[in-house]
Image 1 (tube, rainbow, N blue to C red):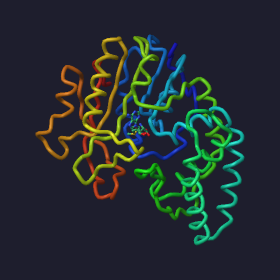
Image 2: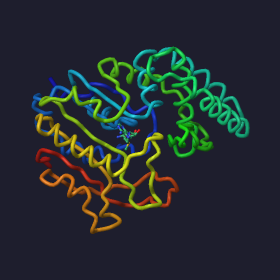
Image 3: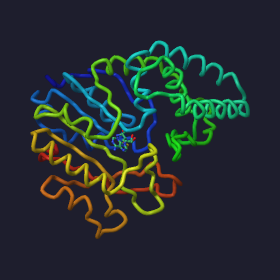
Amino acid sequence: MAKQTKLVSSARPFLKWAGGKTQLLNEFSKRLPIELKNGKITKYVEPFIGGGAFFFYLNQRFSFERCSICDVNEELYLSYRVIQRSVKKLISELETLESDYLSLDDKERESFYYEVRNAFNRQLPEINFNTYQTGWIKRAAWIIFLNRTCFNGLFRLNQRGEFNVPFGKYKNPDILNEDNLNDVATLLKATQIHRGDFVTCRKFIDDRTFVYFDPPYRPLNETSSFTSYSKHGFSDNDQVRLAEFFKELDAKGAKIMLSNSDPKNENPGDSFFDDLYSGYYIERVPAKRMINCNGSGRGNINELIITNYPAKKP
Ligand SMILES: C[S@@+](CC[C@H](N)C(=O)[O-])C[C@H]1O[C@@H](n2cnc3c(N)ncnc32)[C@H](O)[C@@H]1O
């Protein structure tokens, strides 16, 4: 039963992730379905998991019988699986990386960063993302290391699937957080981790499930299109496909929340999401746009929160 208890899990996101939802958690928490609080919901599904801010937040407050998470990004999938299966070995790889890195001066650190980045990219053709392999452990350590030491904590891939973010020049990057990785591993033991398109989660969703969708943003304008979490991209057709999936799950009786940037920020006449989700509950809440590709789009914008149930505010 998803009974509300105090700090069920202490796990927090282990990667910084573009589009991470930490700043909106408060708004989401005001709009949780009542069935989550009264124990009728027993499962949680998040098909665009990214760094998992809401997944970790909810699991600190509710105890689910089962969680299922999914993402199309292969490197992200690999990282979650390694923590789930081999957290001790991962910690030991990160210990070595951290002590090697921190013993260097600024110039040497930059070269070390690019050596790891090159090794990571060179290894890509050899990696089989379909079957768990011990070789994944070092790669997961590289992913966490690069995420902690790169510019802006971005995870960006080019068309060839290569990581291409420059060095970040942080004085004291938090490369290894052993306690948190152990907490994440404990939580992931009771979590199904999937790689692929969001519909992969279909079979895990029923009328006792709470689903949260956080798809890639629809670009605010033509120059702000940060869609490169993966080499696949996310088009307006994908947004339409997602709205159809939302309706299918609504008909199954699931409780669903979805967030996205509001196109009316840029063009008040753009009712793309209002049309796609007409008949559902659509709210606009203020947010700060943190990351886009050139940083120029920072500032206040509205975020959409769409639910298939009346979101109750205190
Ligand atoms: C806005 S981010 C999610 C951020 C997350 N809520 C957080 O707090 O970090 C969107 C995620 O969707 C993933 N994605 C893109 N296309 C997808 C698809 N077709 N199916 C599933 N995941 C997809 C991206 O890899 C990215 O991690």
